[in-house]
Length: 151
Length: 161
Image (cartoon, rainbow over all chains, first blue to last red; front, side, top):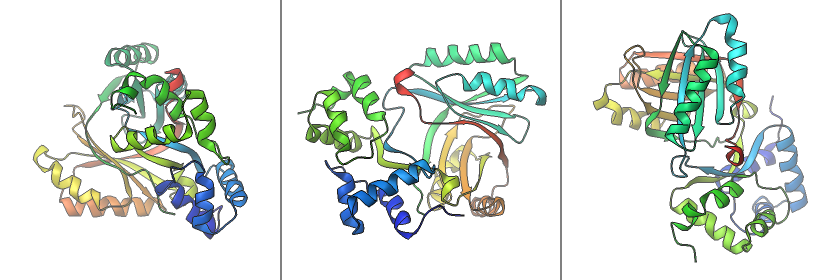
């Protein structure tokens, strides 16, 4: 069930693809949608409150702003997944953390401001969790990033 | 006004401030600009150059896939011969359901090197997309890493990293 109407759809698409970089961006969007700015603001606030929009802002190229990151896979006993997940979640550099189907049952991404910091955090996590096995799978090349979704 | 390396030197501050979520108010860049001690116009110019120089991939809203109809997703790890990665890249560039695709380090005990994040309106739709890609590239060496539980998914907190 969609929590939004046709104007919301157009608004979401514009917010993702054509966010106006001007002093009054919402007024500009209001013009584009032929809708009062106050209504645009309240629609965006509602979409944010509903969780449809996570946020508005820049999507940085993490490598270019000096960050190092990697995907990590852990193999841990089924009954220790929850505890391990909690430990992993507690690190600020962890942005994604999932239990997945398969032998490697925990997959998380870790970012840090240097390779050394990344390695030492990873060691710390492994010392706390004692996984049966782990894989460090950093990116070699980006083939595609398309984070905007037409709705 | 702003030399290219300027924001790299000042990076932390300007990038950390910019990284905050934009306010939903009439002049959302104003507060941010004031905190940085620059004008709105200067701030907008900085954002435009950061986009032009590739520091910012895009500026805009980030939506939750699950909330806009893409209720299902699957991470797929593929074993693609190195010399065929370019071909694979071309194939998935036209596949709308693929949001992210990375070539990653391969391990002897985990012989996969390409990872695609696939979104669909259902699990079946995701599987159809995987089949489509698999047929197009004529490679069946892949493994489906369906999500069982999401423990964390959030924007990187640069101010506390």
